[in-house]
Image (cartoon, rainbow, N blue to C red):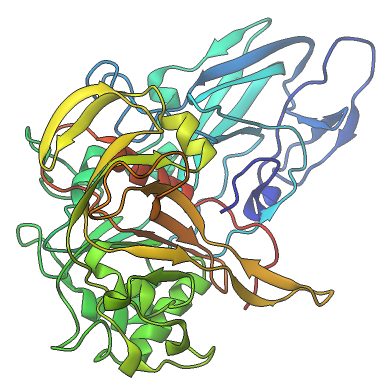
Length: 482
């Protein structure tokens, strides 16, 4: 998965250019230039595009901490706040055009000018900004906050909490954008609780989901559960209708025992369903699956993840053009297990999670509070068993070299029946994996439930998956294979 470092989404080029002054002072005159972002004439000053009201005699700075939706100071208990790593912050002379309200491909390109990103504590500093009025844009994946600011002479502007907490609702007129989300309500994994705790919905005093609040952006489809009757229709109906499916940026399919008909996995689903899911991801959609719903990954994309033999769909179930559904598995692993010593293999998640404070798992369904150690934390609710991840050749580049998708293992941990064996990177099994198949989208699979049972706050495994909700939405780098 590619981050924003040294890249921005291609769509920013028409409207978003950083407006940052040159370092130091002097008598260099700006060159007059129209950057095409508005009807106003802008100025080019050592590569930075400047607004018409810029004061060239003075610079200031902008700083702050970017917070996860619904988890900034004042929204959660003190010290339980959650920062956002690698959020993109830039300045523009015009408000960014609204993100497409259906699945789309966002390819990364080199930025036209300077910008900044947040560190692992969510903090950033943009210095040497000429005094003037700007649009300030903060973005992580499909979550974007746009607002107008003015930098006065010698001002060091520190953003308020409201100015730096990513939005939980879609309200473009007020500069707030979030993805369109479809959630298949499973009967085991209450993933909706995380969305509620991110403000994309509500939770009760026990931390249990209490209904969607982001009208038009969060739809529920029944898949063994129905979240108190709010489901619009069934998951089967959604994935059979691509015109409806493409209206969403992210499709969540948390753990459920539900299958098509009485068969295993998707063996009884129409071929169009498999094609729709591949098309959704190819078009830029994000498919986010946990535990016993693994057939929505393993039947549709059988190559990148190899499960234990009793619940694995072999790679040859897909020959590049069609499926052999007789080889499909339902991906329902057993027995269950708790990873007592899981660790964040991904270095950025490790640095981000380490030292955070909040709820911790003290045993299956039992919670306390403490400081997180990213190299040793407990993960509950695992059922499936990943044996290995497999690099897959997607095609050839323009020079004839192979384009390889190497699945990314974010979290690894102890396997069932082998506690305390996950030391360093040895004796561990993959628990949370992402990969990028043909096209422009991403697939995330987790062996463990996002939320095992209702509780207040977000435990480490929930924070990681909330992090990945935003991370899987970042722009796509490298060649796109169709």
